[in-house]
Amino acid sequence: MLLTIDVGNTETKLGCFSHDELQQTWRVTTELRRTPDEYGVFFTQLFATGGIDIEAIGAVAIASVVPKLDPVLESACGRFFKAIPIFLKPQTQRLIAIVTENPSEVGADLVAAAIGGVRRFGAPLIVVSFGTATVFIAISSAGEYLGVAIAPGIAVSIDALIGRTAKLPQIALETPGRAIGRNTNEALQSGIVYGFTGQVEAVVERIRAEMGVRAKVIATGGLADVVAKQTPVVDAVDPYLSLVGLNLFHRSARDARRDEQDGIT
Image: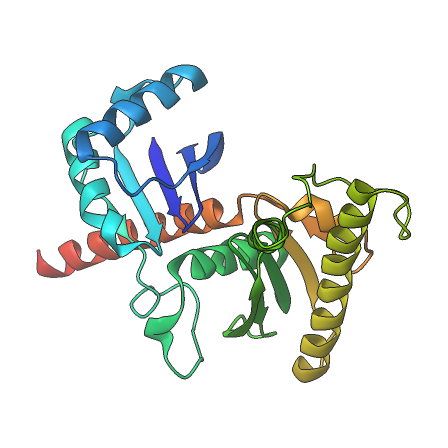
């Protein structure tokens, strides 16, 4: 069984694959202060709740944008799973051509989502990832990673607004049903939900114009449903595209090792 880990700045997604089928997923807060042992115990507890035997984990693939956690996770995986994880590096992976000016600057999580998106939905494609940032990934008809547009994420924007405004309350991220709020909660919900919906529609329109093709739009990430339900511009929602991409990356790396070994022998 393969464990895939997508380490983001705010959240970490985990998924277990068996024969290329995603069996179980978790979404947890990214915690910088855990030790390898604490992460190992944490993983063990998660697996117990999902009915996954820790002994069944035979390989680990990771996409991380938090370098500080890379050695911690590597140590935890080695001790608790007896597996050395492979890390997706955008500039060396072979599944998608990255044609940006500096491929090494591209986030591993975004590359994983792009790989998963192309495999599941084809190309051309625009993947909108709703995480700490809202990121629009443009993928050409030839399946090339063209580049991205990055905007502040929904949760980050809410936290900034609430934190800088003494009298505004915390709100549930729900659709108010009307644009003109009749109370503070409705007003906040309207501005946030419809505001981000308008942002998605406007940015997608500009990206499509630059690509010269009406690319399909896929939303991913924990808050994807919030916006996707409000606009026809989003064709589908898949919250775990990055995990799908990591599974494909692991398979590619495994096959490359086998080819290399066959060449040596």
